[in-house]
Image 1 (cartoon, helix red, strand yellow):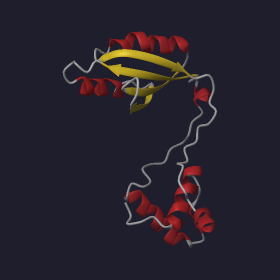
Image 2 (cartoon, rainbow, N blue to C red):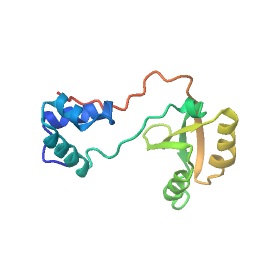
Image 3 (tube, rainbow, N blue to C red):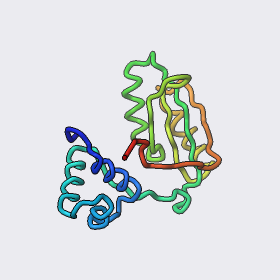
Image 4 (tube, rainbow, N blue to C red):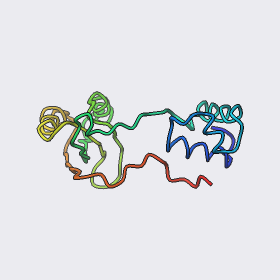
Amino acid sequence: MPDKLDKIDLKILKILQQNSKITNLELSKRIGLSPAPTLERVKKLEQATVIESYHAKVNPQSIGLNVKTFVLVSLAWQKENALNHFLEKIKEIEEITECYIITGEADFLIKIVCKDIPTYEQLLFKTLSQIDEIERLKTLMTLSTVKDSKVLPYKYE
């Protein structure tokens, strides 16, 4: 990571999070630098992995992925290598788009995106419930999305 991010770096980060397809010329105008130093700053942020990657945000419904669920997972910790086995298995399930180790009533929170309820039910009963290390699953079905921002909450100014 660069020694310290200055105000210009922070402006670059905010703008690129809002629109990663912005041209270097437009970005340079918005931050008040010429194009060459702007590009140099972006490259430094990439090399320092402050900027990890660029993505297209796809509307899931537009490609037929209409169900989003969050699942609380509790592991059977008494089983040898439970954590490693569980992590290996869930990394293979493409419908699991996010996984977090959490505190509280469960050990993990996973996000699943799939076509419909029957597809989710099949994933739950034929895939997830077959993972020996899982002791308990609790599904939280989403009804609608209220906010889905990818801009990190940071003081950019």
